[in-house]
Image (cartoon, rainbow, N blue to C red; front, side, top):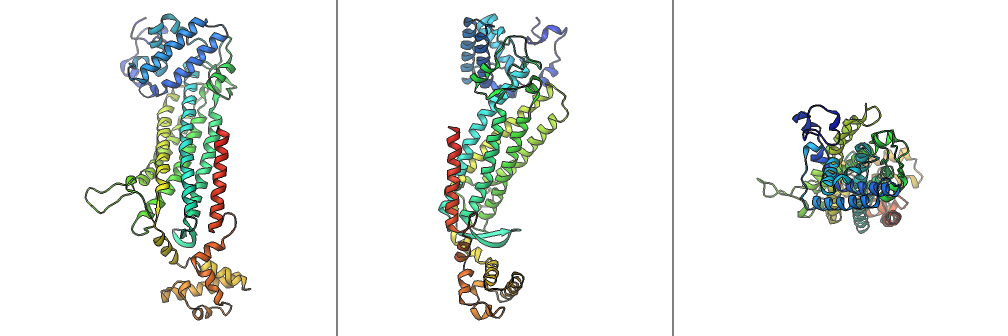
Length: 468
């Protein structure tokens, strides 16, 4: 055969591939990243072929030893990747044949690059998800620990970015934790659907060899073989599902990043981020920029783009495999890397957040944040809620003119709006009294925050226990 034609399919062709087309259709520059999974899958495939009698034990051992040596070459950076061989699969197979001779050509018996690559990607994603989950766990543990420590730290709660009611910093952090907990569930659910083995589907219809797909699935740690050969080689739902998870996760991290950026500003002055998570300005020596959260916020759009890329890639594909699917790897690889790095940054950064408690407390005193507490107080005294709302509105209008918060008004000043108001009103107009009064599950009372933190720890421990 001419060296100009690919050894995996060149026999049918009468002229070599155009040099540009060769480069254009090759994927080895990026799919070589799948080499560990490709070798893992090939070793399992060869083991299964020997068990069913398609390969001899000596052939199996030669293949496995050769693949192990190739894996070492790749890890040491000694492996020479070839664009004419198109992809990771043919590069490894060609090197195996060079090392062990004709036996290397027997490895591909009963499989196709279609089911091979589908298996490699699932193995890669399974490994990637396990790394990402570990970072999610670290982030959740950091959030829960900081929330527990700051269960009594008072800050303003916002709606429309306007001061609404006082909350605790711990309560706010546990809101973040709830977001990440849902992401954690989505990731684990995605992993279940990834853990299905395409190998054995061959090109699209299965194979005539007496393979045992259950053996291969067990060797590779898959839950089960895929049920339908056509779907097995063409399905990329798992890639879309992962990037969907990634998009929601980055949306959450972006919301948190926005708050961190605001809180570190001189205008808010709620928190300090350690210097190791910030950078300076080349022209303004006083600047300390929260670059880590800003960059995470920016990378969110990148992940959204990968989701749209994969959805568009798959939207018009007929069954079964099509060359279009070569385009799934770069967005998927980048999504994995981006998610992993953003989570690592947050897992390192969040526990190191230093709240500026005095600034938070002072901010909570502004904006009449205990107005709702005054309305609730009046209702408990027998005033109808709508009337109480009107009374408090009048007292706020007075406070704006007098430049006084409700808690700074005298009893006589408050009584001009309702004779129902008595000295005990000041128990609910303090920030401490306001947060303590929300003493129910999901509320911002310090005791509830601590209890919620413990429930979150227990839930996370249960997930980690199941994984073990």
